[in-house]
Length: 573
Image 1: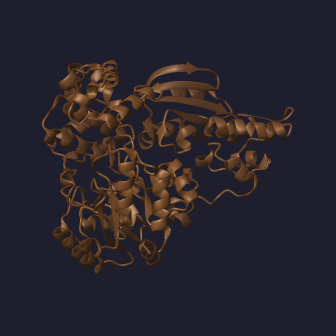
Image 2 (image 1 turned 180 degrees about the vertical axis):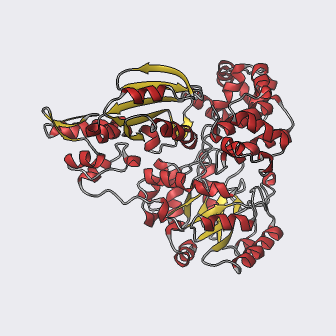
Image 3 (image 1 turned 60 degrees about the horizontal axis):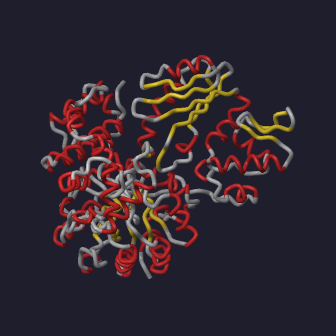
């Protein structure tokens, strides 16, 4: 079966990791990482592009060799180089990549210096203090590694939201082709839009379950049928995700969808509410004795319990039932509420499209504005802008704006916060920008107080308007900075500085819990993509997911404002 883009990207990233551990040429490693990002950002499936006769080597940064490897993966084949590397390296070495704080270079350093080739030898070295003898491994990193091992970093990993979605979407489409099937929807943590997904859940409606079950277990990507009964089945896909299917009659579809969507705590709270009214609630409906009172739709079910229908993203037992009972659920922000994107890169630094191309793509999506925020000079690997190059970009943006109608490109920068909290560019050039997005890209392992003070000092500069990807975490690859988030948010509110909800699927930073904290403290948010290509502008919806999980409304997000109001909101003072 052809691989979806997310699976192709994962294989290319794995290949880059293994080459990096082996100490291969950095340019070769970077080429595979760049290819993974290009594939992940494609607006269409690579397999469909090949079927249409399109040349993959026409993609930016993809030559004939990489195009050939992508084609092999897209068609469901295996890469001989990847197989060779997996056999050559100790399996335990590869497993170490799942430990927070350890990337390929650090795994390579540990293997070279201490012979560490398994989680057991890593844990022993960390406990004995031996890690500190390796350059770059201090007490902070040692604590991060021990915490990660204690928290089960090496257990079966959860899939990122976007990767799980790419796997689930074609499976759901396949299942909807079953004879006699009515509605069929994804449930579980994917429907709640959690940042990572353990298993997939599907609820389907059919008068006769057999044909639906037959089609489910016949899906081409099934590696193993774990269980099959009359109305429920469990499969494991080739990529490792487990999928559970439940088939119910139409009268129970809403109840089953509700039951299999909410967190365990949410479902328990609903059942307790039903019991308090002398009723029984399960996946088949709400019952008084043997009489079904509700269950056909979720709205009907919640209504029968005296509640307004609770959005799936809020079903975590975080006060949503009480708010629904009081008619006080917020109107959550939607993708349609957003008028633009305030964190976008071009090929002036590490983006893959020109200024004009990014503007055209954003306008085609219906945006009213974008902010071009290319990197500052200290980020050498991104070919960051110095003051002179940034000044030229400001002029280029002004010239482009003179040609545009009903659309504006804002001039900005993603300026590095240096170790001592100073900004990477002088105020005289920053003051010429429409907005300044500040971010940490180095010295991730500072102790909590120093890291927090570093960010506070950066926000003391009144030219900083947005703090980008505040925690700095990379899902499954790097833990967040050691920051006092409550203190940081209170300082941001006092300084009228916005915090970013970075919609890049490997970041989702702020996450839902941090969005909820920002709401309680009163900090304004900006939902942005950090896009490096036109296709990545479509990632905004993932940022909206996290904002909704944090109970955020449109009035709490600055890029829901029309341009004149946005300009006023971004001015500090």
